[in-house]
Length: 168
Ligand code: NI
Image (cartoon, rainbow, N blue to C red; front, side, top):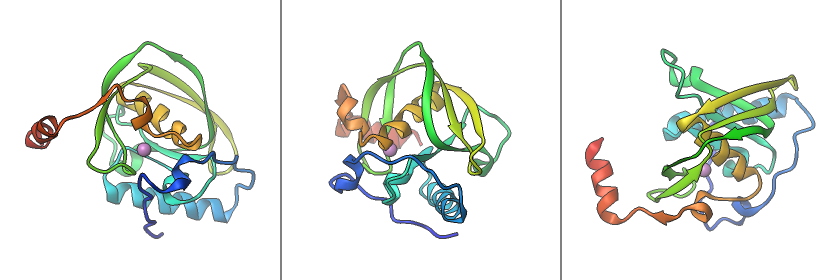
């Protein structure tokens, strides 16, 4: 496994649409293993392949609703994911590893159900509420070249950011 560089806002690859994964081969597995390591090291809750410079429809989402799991065990690998059901609404803070130091207020569905394939090509469905639902939506947006800053009603101010870091 190896760490990959996380692309940051201003890099045009983040604005491009990713292509479906068609080969569930060793190359995909290496990409996913590297993405897992990169996500854990960065301390995020999700990562999409274009964020490491690969325009393929593959994302990782951490299922933070599941208690008693290690960070590594919380990671769900989603290949060619699509949202098949969404309901409710939540408005809250959101950030992105590709937009460091910036947080915004974004409205997302409260619950989503996602259909995807695993790293071997097997179809499965999973669902999430709250932060996990937010994360599914955020990561899937990356596959279509969208960043949360486009959706944010507003970005947090310097004071709000300081309050946030003070809470940690
Ligand atoms: Ni992001």
